[in-house]
Length: 324
Image (cartoon, rainbow, N blue to C red; front, side, top):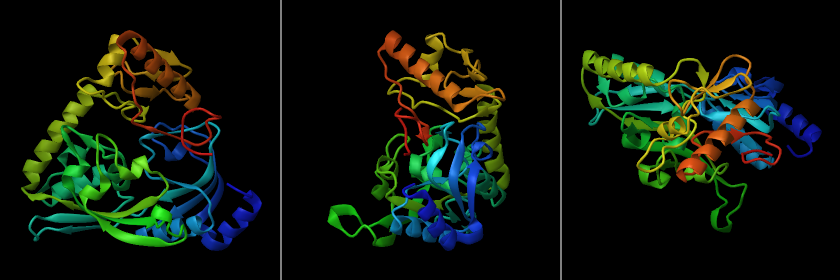
């Protein structure tokens, strides 16, 4: 953050009890990794998330939105930006529309949302039942599994963005309803992910279909069984790399004879090569060393450059990543 003491005073005045300082991020990431955030601000509703984002943009203070922390690797050195913890979780099902829909704030856990849809006998999110991320993060990264992804379900998303395109005022902000085409979705990416820091997902409206609780639960159970058989237990960030066109990152890593390779207390899973497991005391640097090793060995052996699916957040001391 610029001028940290002055900035902290302004933030304290603006956010009061929603603000914490010197916060360990280990408890907020799926793999229990990462250093400290200088400042964390809690957003309990989508209105909070919008107001916090606008205030930080007005103050020209960089910030990172953190949901479940399931697909981010936070540096051991921490994050010098403000971390906005998204805990906005309101949900409304509309069962009698055509098609039936669900509106939810962006901090909702997408796996939990899929399970709630099943209780209502609403189909379409079975693929997401085992995904630990938030709905906003799913839209941001076009999350998917079992041949489906969030772009298949999306009807509309409420977006807050800065009016800084084409020379417009940076301190002008607009809420818009974006249909799927505005996101320019690609495999595990979107316009928002390719242009970080310019927009925030506030809420999402998803299309579903009418079924029965029993049928939806049966399909979710099938997917969960596949997940348990193919993906390792333990603290991890999920898939580390995107699958290259026509191939699988896990297969390439296994073929490079890297499964079971460890650095510190981190290990490339013996079950699935595209997962790195924290056995308890791993550091983010341990993870990063294994990431670089996998990229290097796969490139040397197969000529394939593995692209990260996770994001690097925080201070990486000049290494590839996001943050100051």
